[in-house]
Image (cartoon, rainbow, N blue to C red):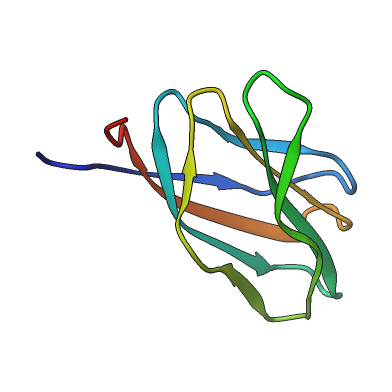
Length: 108
């Protein structure tokens, strides 16, 4: 069976504001998350999953610094269920480019 690879991006324009990057519509697998600092100063980012139907946040990384001219990759593969929301925030407006790769519709 062929896999349905997808990508999602985010570039938060406001500091300290949550941005929803992706909402799972099935059983999916996030296979890569890469954040680049595009600001002139160090930034700090957090990336987490809000579990479907709850107010429970599961952090993949929290308050991680990214120096000027650097990037951060979050290793591992993360299975998400339908309704789970991948979210990101940064302390610097227009300072982050986030790229997410995933596989859509993994069998249950």
